[in-house]
Image 1 (cartoon, rainbow, N blue to C red):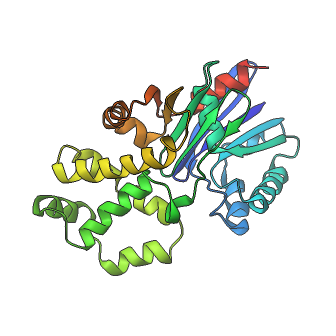
Image 2 (tube, rainbow, N blue to C red; image 1 turned 45 degrees about the vertical axis):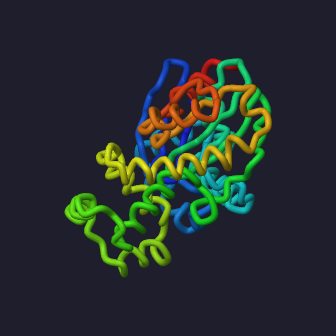
Length: 281
């Protein structure tokens, strides 16, 4: 059996398959290996009760997640998986490679992730090349859900939201400065905390203030991660992730403005990954 996991910071999609087809699929909390401590890895894997009956039958695992640039975290997580899935050959790869493999159609292209975080790379079917590094939710993640949510929360706390938006936000998400600071600087997963406000942006996307906020962040992403590539106008860009999918009309409009060709928008990369691993040799 083969286990394929496509994880972002917020959620992870799991598929267990054998030659007969998909035997199990489910969704869990996300796994950002750059943010998870070893103790949390050790406690979470055994709780995947759906997989325990198949643990000894799984012979191959492809686990895609953010945070794999931290080698020590990858080594630690691999050991945790090996303790449960003792017969499996385990491959831990980046969420960027997952996105690239899921949308690749035999033609080289740029692949952009816009989900809880953001990232871009060029992919030719074999090699993944990054011109601009991913700096995470504190230094980077331009245009991502965490960045968009953070800007919205700042506007709320600074009271620069228009009155109608301020009232709407207060009814749904009334939050004190103290609670916001605690969630940002003390509690785990602040990137997920920020990204949780994206649905409010989606619901009010036609408001001029919200539209401007989103445009500014997407323009920053395009300038930093797309236009910085000299060959950006020679290839198309495939966008992957929920934020890209939900705001695809705005992204497509901005890309047209900058003469960037868009090939597709993919909300869920797992289907493409299944095709890659279960069909390709």
